[in-house]
Length: 342
Image 1 (spheres, rainbow, N blue to C red):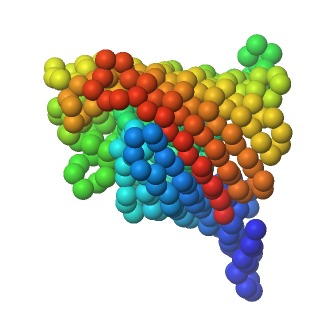
Image 2 (tube, helix red, strand yellow):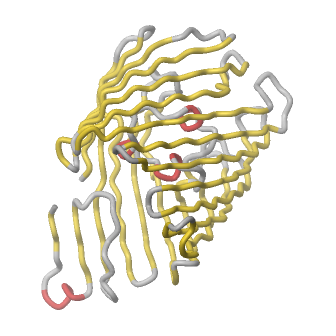
């Protein structure tokens, strides 16, 4: 960690920190606290149908500034995702997030700008380096929900007391956004709206429900109404169980399914403080936009994670992909990934 402090009297009014990684700056009263950090990862991957590929996948840099009840967060990203896992490849440099939040109390706050969509567990976190696996679940890889919103969010959390004898925290969010060509909003057109509510118990259990509605200008110009039920349980024996079930209803008749489901259940075992094993099974409707049909796809993901240092993540992963009544052929995919938080 590198600590940069302004000289002279200004040192009492500002605090600059570089290289803290993800986290929350401590309360500095009236001082302005700014944190600069980011992460990057690179991989080598292959499957049994396509040539192998490797290189830098992500390089993210963020600036997080806080003063009293205000927070300004700006994040840029270089992304080079390949299509060997069966999802569309991407190669771009973009402004990932840029938002201002006013949080006068725990119970209520307002956020405006470009922010991660508050939908389920995986989408809001967004940073691949923080996830147990390298490849995302089906609903994230197929971008059933846009990664970001450009708009306004009302949010907060309350602490209702003991639930089943455990400390509880109830969080909520209501948001609206706007999308148009040129705004990089994952096909979103016009207005969008959504909400999320989740309950945490003793920092060990979580259960949540989210909803989202948008117009998709690229796929049949259809309206999509989506919901997700998600949860997490930290169990005895260093086990963590996590699951999400997404259901999407489309209003247009067409070659692609009017209803789509995507589900996964994942189990992580922290074998040691520097290593874990993870398994995820996922299933759902997978739109094949070129063939204009919707296939059923099952994915088994096996991951070995190694954390030689708190800021370094190494993942070795194998994916088994199977299609039902599909034009696409079954395939296996493997990847080695190294990531660094700074």
